Amino acid sequence: MRKLLLVLLMGTSGCNWWYNEVPSPDDLMHAVPWFDHMITSKAVHPYQFDTVPRNTVPGTVPLGDIEADWGTTGAMAAMTIYSFDVAQADAHVRPAGVAGAGAAVPGVVRAGGELYQTFCSVCHGPAGNGQGLVKVGAPALNTVRVAGYTDGFLYSIVRYGRNLMPPYGDKIVRRDERWAVVDYVRSLQGAPGAVTPVATPATGGTN
Image (cartoon, rainbow, N blue to C red; front, side, top):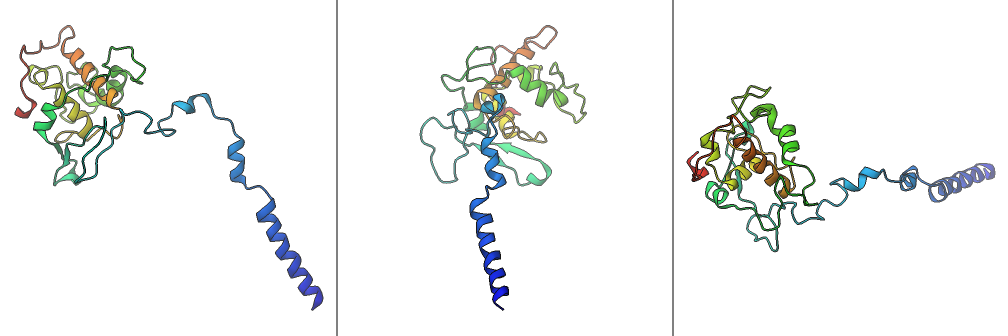
Protein backbone atom coordinates (compact mmCIF):
# COMPACT_ATOMS: atom_id res chain seq x y z
CA MET A 1 0.00 0.00 0.00
CA ARG A 2 2.81 2.34 0.88
CA LYS A 3 4.52 1.59 -2.42
CA LEU A 4 1.32 2.40 -4.30
CA LEU A 5 1.00 5.76 -2.53
CA LEU A 6 4.64 6.51 -3.28
CA VAL A 7 4.11 5.78 -6.95
CA LEU A 8 1.03 8.04 -7.03
CA LEU A 9 2.91 10.86 -5.33
CA MET A 10 5.79 10.54 -7.77
CA GLY A 11 3.38 10.52 -10.68
CA THR A 12 1.60 13.61 -9.42
CA SER A 13 4.81 15.49 -8.83
CA GLY A 14 6.01 14.37 -12.22
CA CYS A 15 2.95 15.90 -13.88
CA ASN A 16 3.50 19.15 -12.03
CA TRP A 17 7.09 19.20 -13.12
CA TRP A 18 6.08 18.51 -16.72
CA TYR A 19 3.50 21.28 -16.90
CA ASN A 20 5.35 23.85 -14.80
CA GLU A 21 8.98 23.35 -15.74
CA VAL A 22 9.12 21.94 -19.26
CA PRO A 23 8.79 24.74 -21.85
CA SER A 24 5.72 24.61 -24.04
CA PRO A 25 6.23 24.08 -27.79
CA ASP A 26 4.27 27.30 -28.26
CA ASP A 27 7.11 29.17 -26.58
CA LEU A 28 9.41 28.15 -29.40
CA MET A 29 7.45 30.40 -31.76
CA HIS A 30 8.80 33.44 -29.92
CA ALA A 31 12.34 32.31 -30.69
CA VAL A 32 11.72 32.28 -34.44
CA PRO A 33 12.89 35.58 -35.99
CA TRP A 34 10.49 37.42 -38.30
CA PHE A 35 10.94 37.22 -42.00
CA ASP A 36 11.69 40.54 -43.66
CA HIS A 37 8.34 40.73 -45.44
CA MET A 38 6.20 40.05 -42.37
CA ILE A 39 6.37 43.66 -41.19
CA THR A 40 4.40 44.66 -44.30
CA SER A 41 1.58 42.25 -43.56
CA LYS A 42 -1.80 43.84 -42.94
CA ALA A 43 -2.34 41.37 -40.11
CA VAL A 44 0.44 42.93 -38.05
CA HIS A 45 -1.16 46.32 -37.46
CA PRO A 46 -4.43 46.29 -39.41
CA TYR A 47 -5.52 49.72 -38.15
CA GLN A 48 -2.23 51.59 -38.14
CA PHE A 49 -3.45 53.77 -41.02
CA ASP A 50 -6.56 55.92 -41.01
CA THR A 51 -7.02 54.94 -44.67
CA VAL A 52 -8.23 51.51 -43.61
CA PRO A 53 -12.04 51.78 -43.60
CA ARG A 54 -13.93 50.81 -40.50
CA ASN A 55 -17.59 50.09 -41.04
CA THR A 56 -19.55 51.92 -38.39
CA VAL A 57 -21.95 50.23 -36.03
CA PRO A 58 -25.59 50.92 -37.03
CA GLY A 59 -26.98 53.91 -35.16
CA THR A 60 -23.59 55.44 -34.42
CA VAL A 61 -21.64 58.30 -35.94
CA PRO A 62 -17.96 57.84 -36.90
CA LEU A 63 -15.48 60.23 -35.30
CA GLY A 64 -12.28 61.45 -36.88
CA ASP A 65 -11.02 60.64 -40.35
CA ILE A 66 -12.89 57.35 -40.71
CA GLU A 67 -14.67 56.36 -43.86
CA ALA A 68 -18.35 56.00 -43.09
CA ASP A 69 -20.36 53.06 -44.39
CA TRP A 70 -22.99 53.92 -47.02
CA GLY A 71 -23.48 50.46 -48.46
CA THR A 72 -26.55 48.30 -48.09
CA THR A 73 -26.85 44.63 -48.82
CA GLY A 74 -29.84 43.79 -50.97
CA ALA A 75 -32.62 41.46 -49.91
CA MET A 76 -31.28 38.85 -52.33
CA ALA A 77 -27.80 38.86 -50.84
CA ALA A 78 -27.68 35.07 -51.03
CA MET A 79 -27.76 35.44 -54.83
CA THR A 80 -24.90 37.95 -54.75
CA ILE A 81 -27.13 40.92 -55.54
CA TYR A 82 -25.37 43.94 -54.07
CA SER A 83 -26.28 47.58 -53.84
CA PHE A 84 -25.41 50.81 -52.11
CA ASP A 85 -26.83 54.25 -51.54
CA VAL A 86 -26.44 55.77 -55.01
CA ALA A 87 -26.88 59.36 -53.85
CA GLN A 88 -24.14 59.02 -51.26
CA ALA A 89 -21.95 57.16 -53.73
CA ASP A 90 -22.24 59.97 -56.29
CA ALA A 91 -21.48 62.54 -53.60
CA HIS A 92 -18.47 60.63 -52.30
CA VAL A 93 -15.18 62.37 -53.08
CA ARG A 94 -11.55 61.52 -52.58
CA PRO A 95 -10.41 62.75 -49.16
CA ALA A 96 -7.62 65.28 -49.04
CA GLY A 97 -4.24 63.63 -48.79
CA VAL A 98 -5.33 60.31 -50.31
CA ALA A 99 -3.01 59.58 -53.20
CA GLY A 100 -3.99 58.58 -56.69
CA ALA A 101 -2.65 55.86 -58.96
CA GLY A 102 0.21 57.91 -60.34
CA ALA A 103 1.29 59.69 -57.17
CA ALA A 104 4.53 58.58 -55.54
CA VAL A 105 3.18 58.58 -51.99
CA PRO A 106 4.12 55.91 -49.40
CA GLY A 107 0.45 55.47 -48.49
CA VAL A 108 -0.28 53.70 -51.77
CA VAL A 109 1.00 50.18 -51.24
CA ARG A 110 -0.16 48.67 -54.52
CA ALA A 111 -0.65 50.56 -57.76
CA GLY A 112 -4.03 50.78 -59.39
CA GLY A 113 -2.86 48.82 -62.41
CA GLU A 114 -1.63 45.94 -60.27
CA LEU A 115 -4.91 45.81 -58.37
CA TYR A 116 -7.00 46.06 -61.53
CA GLN A 117 -5.13 43.26 -63.26
CA THR A 118 -5.40 41.12 -60.14
CA PHE A 119 -9.06 41.57 -59.27
CA CYS A 120 -10.84 43.20 -62.22
CA SER A 121 -9.30 42.17 -65.52
CA VAL A 122 -10.48 38.57 -65.29
CA CYS A 123 -14.03 39.79 -65.97
CA HIS A 124 -13.68 43.32 -67.39
CA GLY A 125 -10.64 42.52 -69.54
CA PRO A 126 -7.05 43.80 -69.28
CA ALA A 127 -7.97 46.82 -71.42
CA GLY A 128 -11.31 47.38 -69.73
CA ASN A 129 -13.26 46.39 -72.84
CA GLY A 130 -15.34 43.71 -71.11
CA GLN A 131 -13.43 40.88 -72.81
CA GLY A 132 -12.16 39.07 -69.73
CA LEU A 133 -11.38 35.39 -69.44
CA VAL A 134 -14.48 34.82 -67.33
CA LYS A 135 -17.55 35.44 -69.47
CA VAL A 136 -20.14 36.71 -67.01
CA GLY A 137 -21.42 39.68 -68.99
CA ALA A 138 -19.18 42.17 -67.18
CA PRO A 139 -19.60 45.60 -68.81
CA ALA A 140 -16.80 47.39 -70.62
CA LEU A 141 -15.28 50.17 -68.54
CA ASN A 142 -14.00 52.31 -71.42
CA THR A 143 -17.41 53.38 -72.70
CA VAL A 144 -18.94 56.83 -72.68
CA ARG A 145 -21.52 55.66 -70.17
CA VAL A 146 -18.97 54.48 -67.62
CA ALA A 147 -16.78 57.50 -68.29
CA GLY A 148 -19.74 59.62 -67.23
CA TYR A 149 -20.00 58.02 -63.81
CA THR A 150 -18.65 60.03 -60.91
CA ASP A 151 -15.45 58.89 -59.25
CA GLY A 152 -17.42 58.27 -56.08
CA PHE A 153 -19.79 55.97 -57.92
CA LEU A 154 -16.90 53.91 -59.33
CA TYR A 155 -15.24 53.83 -55.93
CA SER A 156 -18.46 52.56 -54.38
CA ILE A 157 -18.70 49.79 -56.97
CA VAL A 158 -15.18 48.69 -56.04
CA ARG A 159 -16.03 48.70 -52.36
CA TYR A 160 -19.58 47.33 -52.35
CA GLY A 161 -20.13 45.72 -55.74
CA ARG A 162 -23.08 46.41 -57.97
CA ASN A 163 -25.83 44.13 -59.26
CA LEU A 164 -24.10 40.80 -59.99
CA MET A 165 -20.62 42.10 -59.22
CA PRO A 166 -19.62 41.13 -55.67
CA PRO A 167 -17.94 43.60 -53.31
CA TYR A 168 -14.17 43.84 -53.33
CA GLY A 169 -13.88 45.97 -50.22
CA ASP A 170 -12.82 42.90 -48.26
CA LYS A 171 -9.98 42.32 -50.71
CA ILE A 172 -8.89 45.89 -51.44
CA VAL A 173 -9.20 47.13 -47.89
CA ARG A 174 -7.16 50.31 -48.10
CA ARG A 175 -8.97 53.46 -49.12
CA ASP A 176 -6.05 54.83 -51.13
CA GLU A 177 -5.76 51.58 -53.07
CA ARG A 178 -9.43 51.73 -54.04
CA TRP A 179 -8.97 55.24 -55.36
CA ALA A 180 -5.94 53.97 -57.26
CA VAL A 181 -8.20 51.46 -59.00
CA VAL A 182 -10.61 54.26 -59.93
CA ASP A 183 -7.73 56.28 -61.36
CA TYR A 184 -6.55 53.30 -63.36
CA VAL A 185 -10.02 52.78 -64.82
CA ARG A 186 -9.99 56.44 -65.84
CA SER A 187 -6.65 55.87 -67.55
CA LEU A 188 -8.15 52.99 -69.53
CA GLN A 189 -10.88 55.33 -70.73
CA GLY A 190 -8.26 57.71 -72.07
CA ALA A 191 -6.03 55.05 -73.62
CA PRO A 192 -5.50 54.97 -77.41
CA GLY A 193 -8.44 53.26 -79.06
CA ALA A 194 -10.65 53.67 -76.02
CA VAL A 195 -13.90 55.59 -76.10
CA THR A 196 -13.37 59.28 -75.38
CA PRO A 197 -14.92 60.26 -72.05
CA VAL A 198 -17.79 62.71 -72.12
CA ALA A 199 -16.98 66.33 -71.32
CA THR A 200 -19.40 66.68 -68.41
CA PRO A 201 -19.66 63.59 -66.18
CA ALA A 202 -23.19 62.45 -65.55
CA THR A 203 -24.38 61.07 -62.25
CA GLY A 204 -23.88 57.40 -61.56
CA GLY A 205 -27.41 57.28 -60.27
CA THR A 206 -28.67 56.97 -63.82
CA ASN A 207 -27.45 53.38 -63.93
